[in-house]
Image 1: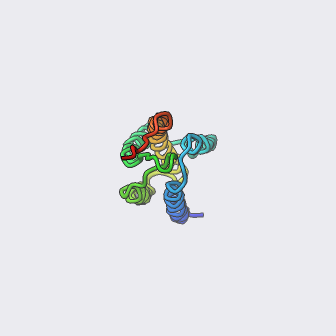
Image 2: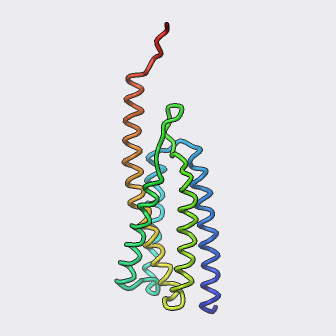
Image 3: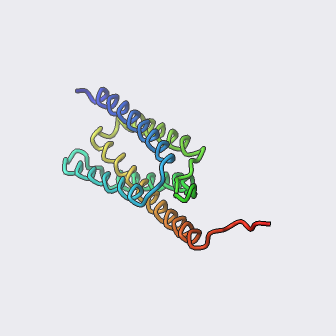
Length: 169
């Protein structure tokens, strides 16, 4: 298989996976949030580190640093658009109008990076870099989501102990 065909197939795969991730994230806002739903995705994603057992996927030190810095940078966009709210005594992830545009932008940036630097870096190495970028993006985001969730959960417990009862007149 030629490198350009492999690049095209992996780009189409990235677009498909990115679209699926957006659909799943939008559906998630319709169900109550839980600690498990916040913590499990990065844990499941961590199995991706096994790819680095295959030597061609290992990026150079500079590429690792670049991928991690870009991932951390993108995580701040996700952190700013992820908020929780209490509805019907349950905690929900508040749907942000900007969230879908940010995810679409990140996906398009990823494809653009892939096309621009795809000729100078092997497809396998590029896969390793994008995995590191995604992981560096999801970890800070999920840590902040966990902290925010716990704060909102404490508010919910406080409300349950001190319910506001309307006064009859």
